[in-house]
Amino acid sequence: MNADSNSAKPDDPSELPGANPGALQSIPGFQPTDWLSFGATTLLALLVYLFTLAPDVGLDNSGVWSTAAAYGGVSSPPGYPLWTLWAWVFTKLLPFSGNAWRVAVSSAVAGALTCGMIALMVSHDGAAILEQVSDNQRLKPKEEKWLRAVCGYAAGMVFGLNGAFWPQAVIVAVWPLSILLLCLILCLLMRWSYGPERRRFLYAAALVYGLLLTNSQIEFAFAPAIPFLVMAGNSKAGRDMFLVAGILFLAGLIGIWLGHFPSLRGGGGQFFYILPGVITCLMGIGLVIKTRQAFSEWKTILICSGLFLLGQAFYFYLPIASMTNPPINWGYPRTVEGFFHVLTRGQYEHMNPTADVGLYLEQVRLYFVMAGKEFGWPYLFLCLIPFCFLHRIAASERRWIFGLLPAYVCLAFLMLAVMNPGVDRQSQELNKVYFSASYILLALWTGHGLIILGARLARPGKQPETAHFPI
Image (cartoon, rainbow, N blue to C red; front, side, top):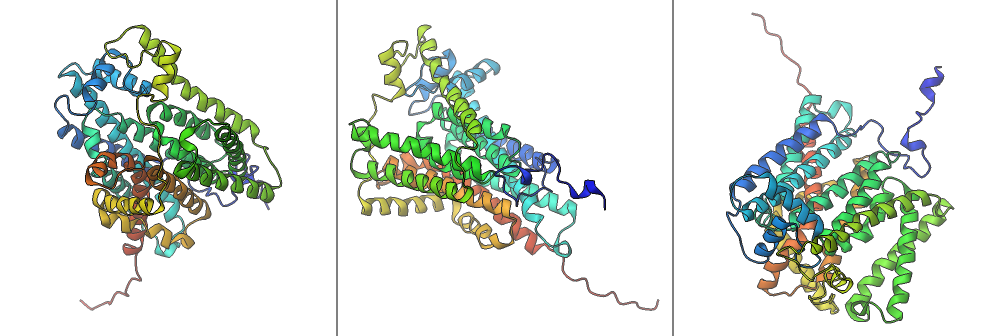
């Protein structure tokens, strides 16, 4: 026998320490079909957004944000340094129309790229799903490519045109860029889960998450889900990340006991802090017992931590911009007091998580009502299809789908508890935009469901025998 055929490749992820042995080796990186789905979805979503774009300054903080973007100033807390520079680029590149319209274009571009990235992930995952179909039941290669591209496009547009996100993508708003960064993190971690030897994707995800928190502090709610997504690619890296998170959780408990973090003392704040922390500690301990090791991936965790802090360092743009004395110089962050006032959102109400169980259950009910209305009830049912066929999906893809579950729980139910929105209609209208982050996961599962459904409905059946008649 040929010795080369029996030896593992040097970069075989299944041979790496802590790598999942079930990783799909036949699924490469993003393929032309995936990029086709990305490009078509991005372009069509952008056309829709531009056609429905707000022509001028709108309500809320539109005027403040537009002015801050035009002069590279300090916007409302927490300053939004990354968004300010992102929007500033569009005010300089576009040579026509008003300043508010140019900034709104930056929202449209961020929203369109988000839709395209969802399509990219769905199309890529579709290759892994279709690989598990038996040869006699598979579609032709060209048909499979079209199925992946079309389902990716459908998933991206379902998200892009939902009632919570679309209105934000056509006005002066910081939220579309936050959603784009969140989607980019998921895309990088998905790529990492399929090729855990390529740690650059994990490192890039850590950097982007640091940048995301400079643009949307509410996305701290996403943090408990990150170790689960990392574990989908490398159990040892996920284990060490759980352990580090557990240490930070215990340090936070000590801080609460010493009188710091008053919003987390007692009531709902303490409960919703302790619950994810306990789960994190238990996961870390369980993985230590399973792998019989601890902190073997300390270099990886150290690099991820450094890159995360590097992303957070973008906040130091605020005092630099403040020194130029721009028209919008919120909080005057060139001083130490002003910097921390802006950074901690000092002028706004502190976090007041839900403390009443009955109220929280009502908020959960209203979340599903809102999701059905804004995202669409038919698509919510399509989200269930991947979970009905988990036993027929490869181990690596199954781990990734399960890894998305904690992300959804954090972005939907943990965020719901932290925000503690009112149950009246006005509060629902004001806060529904923040829950569009959880719709990213729903869109991904919708795309997976469409691919599974399409593969089953369009699979070739047994061909009937052809009768031969005499001419």
